[in-house]
Image 1 (tube, each protein chain N blue to C red):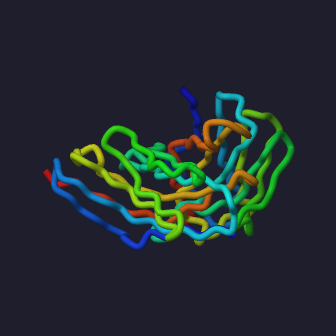
Image 2: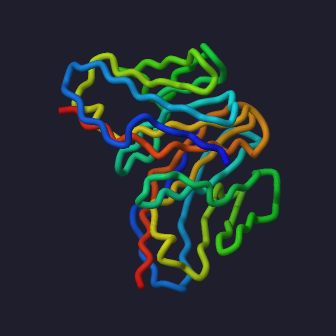
Length: 114
Length: 114
């Protein structure tokens, strides 16, 4: 079974600054995928970034990047140049190639302050 | 763009009522999912369906059932609603393969059972 843990229930950051959200996971699978989803106040879950476990290179999507440490089973999300629209709940999730189930962490509520 | 819609944004029901939550996707996705979202617990999988008339229990199926008679529609049924089923319910869908297993989410239904 997979588990995903987000140890920061809430975080805040000033506009234009950088913030890092933490995520650790546990899996016995040899290949798997990791995701960060964003849920703004509108409640619409949006995929932010994804990482294939067999790829060494950290994924990047514009201002969003990950620090994937496979041996440590860590998958943190870095948001650069934070914007007010980044205020949302962020969920870390994992899935395996052998199944279609996503396992989610508890979520981190990020507030970007002007 | 993939679109996943849910029948209601907000729903208020009484204890003991039978409740239907409907989800429709327009991208011919094979897999569909129902999650429950509670503060501090993240998203937990209730049921999923990997094809028409096929279903599999998730992590918290007790008190729920599902129906998938058509590919685009996946219904969650609360046979006899109870107050501990007050929660946010999210539907999602995805292709069986490709898109790195990304799931696309609906806007959620906030259900209150009185």
